[in-house]
Length: 161
Image (cartoon, rainbow, N blue to C red; front, side):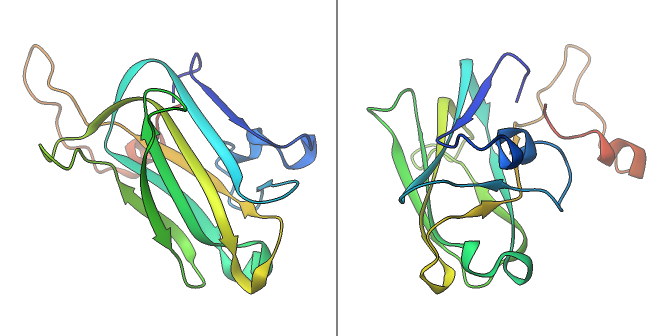
């Protein structure tokens, strides 16, 4: 996400807030507050092409706070969201959710992504989400395709901010 894009959640707790979803620290987390579903809304200032959404979850650390059912909703606003539902059994690590147009098999172009936690393991009420990453496709430049960079230094800085 770019700095002008917004990420918001329905949570008033600053100790476990939205900053922890983007701090690149797997030990911190956003904690929900209130009844389900718990929502994380990612809104872009302009239509953005997105190919992958990654969520980090850790059942061993979070137990009943770990999501077991989530809904990823994509669209231009709150009124036209299309949904992908996922069930997770004791997840440990990154969950990769490919966001492709079903008709054309191209990455989606959207103004908004909404992540809804529908249920937790052990019937937990509040939820922990440790990290969220949004990836766009690599675009061709005027001098051709970007080279594939696989060095450790490059991989550290490949996440969109």
